[in-house]
Length: 382
Image (cartoon, rainbow, N blue to C red):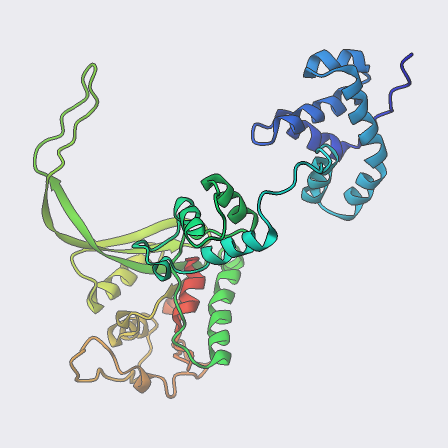
C-alpha cells in the first residue's frame, strides 16, 4: 500500500526560479527534470501522473517531493536573507544528487599536487619548444618525470579546471611607471572618479565624457583581383593577394555614457596638429555642451598647441609656456605651463596632476591625463 505523498509548497520567488530551470537548456538535464517535478507537484498532480511526464517511476517522484519538503524552511531563510542568485544556488543544491563514495581515486593527492605545480612552471624549463602548456604536453611531461605511470589528457584537464588553472591562456598586463604608490593611487582615483561622475554630469548638465585613443598602422588594402560573386553550388570567392596603399590612423572617441563612437578622425598621421584638429571637430559636434576627455600619456596629448587651442576657446589671455627646442619639437614644456595655472578662478587650469580644465564659452573641457600606465589599463578595461 502506497503512503501519502509529501506536500510541496513553494513561494513566488521559488516558483520563478523553478520555472526558469524547468525550461533552461544550459543546466543539467536532471536538474531541469526535477524542477518540473516540483512544479507539477505544487500544481496538485499525483506521483502517478507526474512520472510519465518526466520519464521516471512513481518512487523517484516521491523521493524528490520529500527532499523538497525537508529543505523548504531552509530555502525560506535563504530567500529572506539573500538575493535571487543565492536562492537559485540553494535550489540547485536541493535538487542535485548527494555525494557518493564511488571508487577510490587513481592518483594520490601528492601526485595531483605535483601535476598542478608542473603546470605552473614555464615549459622551457622542461626543454619543450612551446610557450604555453597544453593538456597533452602536461600529461606527457608528468609521465616523463615519473610523477605518474599513465594519465589521460582529459584527466589532466579535469585537475586543472578544479584548481582554476589555465596555463594555455594569457592576457596582456602593463606595469606602472609611477614609483610613488600614494601618487599612483591619487591618479587612479582621479580618473576613476571622472568615469563615475560621467552619467550624472550627462543627465544633469549635458556633459559629454569621452575616452580618446589612437589606432595606428591600419593598412589600406585592395584585393589584386575583383571578388567573384556567389553562384549556384559555389560560395563567394575573394582574392587572396592584395595591394597595399599605405597605412591610416584612427583617432576615436568612445562616449562612456552612451556607449557610442563619436566623431572619429581617419588620416595618415597622428601628429600634434592632427590631435588638435580632432578635438576641435569633436567639440564642434555639440559646441553648446560641456566635454570631458580622458587620454593616455602620448606627447601629443599634452602639447602646447592643444593647451593654446583650449585657452583660445576659453578666451584666456595668459602665457602658457613654449616648446623646448629639442629633437622632439612636438613635446611642449609642460613644466613651464604648470606654475601659476592652478588658480581656481582661471577658466584654464593645469594642476600638478597634469589634467587640463577649460571652459570655452562657459562650457567645460577637461582633459584627464592618466600619468601611469596601470591607471590607463584600468580605465580602458584591458
